[in-house]
Image (cartoon, rainbow, N blue to C red):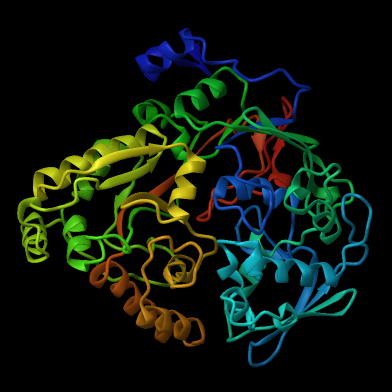
Length: 541
């Protein structure tokens, strides 16, 4: 017996047992799609301004486009709704020229005024966007988002005319064109939002600016996307219908794939760790480096984690090399800093290494020798996956054996887990961050005090100032030096986080059947470029 030509005994007993238990085939029958993607949890939303995760972003980026988009091969920003742009000599003013004949999927024209509305909405504190910080480089965006300014018209973006958008930045931002490709800056339909309020994403037909329309979203079943004939680049959209399945467990994901009910598995977290050795030699197994870090957050607003010595002690007690060797199995590297290697031209400082002796001394200095008097209700929050659970159990053991700390484990469904993080309803929590663009800022600015993705309660004025100065400095060497100083505060001095390991990217798909997926360090694969390969047709590189 075999699957995709691989004997079952090579895939392990677990896989065979799951097949025999009948877990394959749990999704409803539908009109066949061009291909089916296993995408991760059900989306939190389809609103570009408020979605929190990469899996949500893949869907939203197909529906809503910005002035630029990410290239399918290089993951670098390229013209999208804007056909070109001019940059002033001081780097502070960008003038974007929209393409002729842009239309929403419902037929209405897309104009510069839609861009202005969308960006104002994203920074409006009433929208409550965790990613509003992506727009802080625009003049007055941070002041508006923090409530210091209430006049949205003072945001540094305006429509010169229907085809021209003028953007004024707070300081030169070398990666601004990359930011314009991110989903938070996508163009959304003002009329639909005004008519339907918070439920606008569920309106039908949903006006979209991207390559695909939303045919339906059936919770716990699938999202179906259909080619948008009014998309400016519809001639190069290489598929008609795409299904994205909300699957959270690796066992279900691999079963659906092996049974032919799915064609693509995006993430390593959806591949059973115990099968990696068997899967890795196969031609449908694609491994690559990309910009992602697995780490833990400390809630610095709760005692005793308001004391940096306690945070540092808990970080020093973690044997990261053991975690990688015992559990991850994909070639991940232990992380002694936060920004992954290969991010721009940046190199990180080193943070604390595994040092049980120093960890015990610091905890004793903080008033908790061998864990005495440490809170008994202390919890570690994590979301559902076998890897996350294994790491949680191992961290629990390390903190108990090294420090005498008793940590309770709190496993939560994905949406509950995200809500708890945002509400600071945790002590320590499992976290991860995937780079949104190839620059150290995408990792470091998230821990500025007002950034919605901070989620630690930590604020440090020196750190914030260093990030602001670095982003306003055109000299690369000086800029990177400021980033290193800031990262030292983050990972060695204050430690609101503790990095554990750097991710390795894994996609699973048959390259003889699926084309248009190109491994890159951002793990970005625009769905309009993906296509099926007919029998006998050579795959295009």
